[in-house]
Image 1 (cartoon, rainbow, N blue to C red):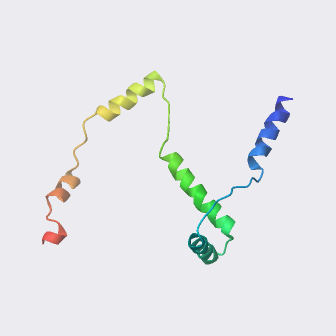
Image 2: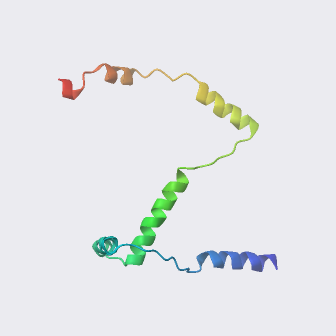
Length: 100
């Protein structure tokens, strides 16, 4: 019975659902023009753009968890002094191109 419920849950996630939006004619026409340039339908274009924006928004809020030992290692790495970078120091001593 549990396996059946899990299979139904997976199927439900892939079931097509309707998303309704309101837009001005100017916005719709711009989307249609962009979709035509990509040779896709308006729906395909909007879903692709919205999915990419959603993924970016979610990745910006990444959460991770660590056990106590890994947390201490993480804190140690964050609090460690920055290693000296001779190449970076040399670059920062150079006069910028716009001042030459």
